[in-house]
Image 1 (cartoon, rainbow, N blue to C red):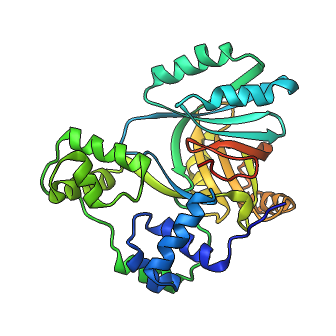
Image 2 (cartoon, rainbow, N blue to C red):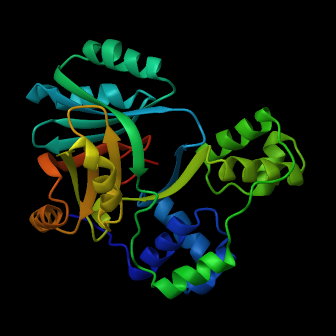
Length: 327
């Protein structure tokens, strides 16, 4: 039994943080409908309870190689395989699923060589794995950075966007060491203040500000709000595996990106043309979504789907069985 439900003000705060993860509380207060002190206190409570947090990961401005791996395990080994893989930094997310595979694992490696080592050397050494299928990412068209809680109306979203425009890249250069220092700090605390960044790196506030703007404008690092899925109005997560004619892949993928339910759309070099992940309100909504896809995208053939039962690791963070971040 869940002992807590996110209320409407919580959801409004979290939607605002989806739009601007580092926004000052004072800037969010008029939109959310509470004073800055209340928002800061509520955010701390949500973090401490593991219901919401801000994660960071390498963006398109940084070099990386991504892949999604389907893993089948001996029934008695699912837990031990999950625990073994969860210790690896390359393993971004692990979903335990019902369907044609036991685990869907998202990998983020530095290079293709690193991906090859993980798939060819690391996975075969894990006791309990009976088979794997790797889908090397070609293009990530959408990830959960675009997904919204839909708690703020459009006029309030525009109000927030106008009050907090995206920072432009600075004119002056910043040393690579300082930039990396900013990245390291934000990976620990995505809302770290400029004064803290300045102090920890031993640089002036203006240099710290320039370094932060450089990292964010260059998309070396992506900051993203995460929320415990089972406590939201969309507790059901599903992986879909699609096959699309080569001439239609880009067209189909672009249309999938616009769906409100979409958490991830990626074209791959594996057995399937497109892999996607969605969040739904009910299991029955799978039928509704699949009917809509069939009507709107007749070229897209759903080859398989897997319902997520648990997510023990998500975007590098370990989670409880009910989806809370382990603090």
